[in-house]
Length: 375
Image 1 (cartoon, one colour):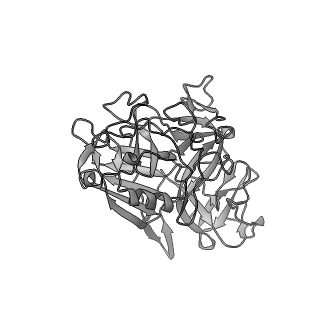
Image 2: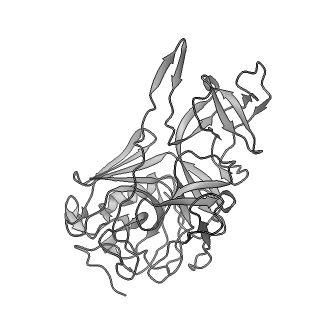
Image 3: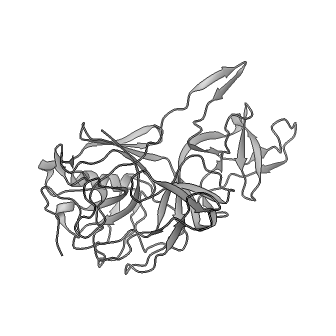
């Protein structure tokens, strides 16, 4: 098995996946030690809006929060809320307890109601999706509206500890297209073993009651998107996002609007650059090769130089290193390097995706978290 050169390479076929130890707030789940390290090498894609506070405006005596039409929001409450059939109704139709991730309903494991676009149709109210497939209206002053990243976990793509199991998800060019344009498989190790479920990041506002979901794809060219059938995925959500600033050699991690981590990084060289763009985390694995640190996050993007890398497709990642002197430099084949203590810290900060995967076959920490790579 050939390894990438530690001083200037990136994740190639390493020795395997080890059992993940407890990190921070929970025990990270692991694949078996027999799994090989995921092949990685490069990064880029289309643009997504910057996250942050939504602006507000005054309409008479009413303060209206203007929501970004390209993002997804949830309406949350600690208690049941009154739901109106129409915003103009004087009396509510019913009182409904907000759904929770602990009690998934209809292929949805999200805390709160997904807000329906267009967002400002009725000032003072939000239209929400209900578990029975209908919609209703809630008063804006009775819920807390928060932006979320919606993650689509492929149903039937769970893996087992030996690297088997798994499945595929069909992707279509447009809703109701007669044939898929591609099929997405599980992320794989150097030996071709499955290391995680199929996962996508939803692209744009999501209607959980629709028959289709538009998603970003882990394919070339970077930034590609497509449509998956709603019945083929379970929707989960997180509020994290990662910014990678190449020229500053810096990574920033946010939980909502709160910056929870900032650290120096090593990035690609002039000849093998880390491309900029919008990606998401596709896998987390534990390395048994010290050259790549303790953990490696596989991303959905690909090197713009390496069509293949050490037998793999040239996909990129964020991983640790045993050589801290490379941090702060342009050194890699396109991957993003962290000091090993910082990659362990990152693994402890990111949320674990809920969904169709079982309790132990694959590592799901951070899956679907957006990663914006900026020049």
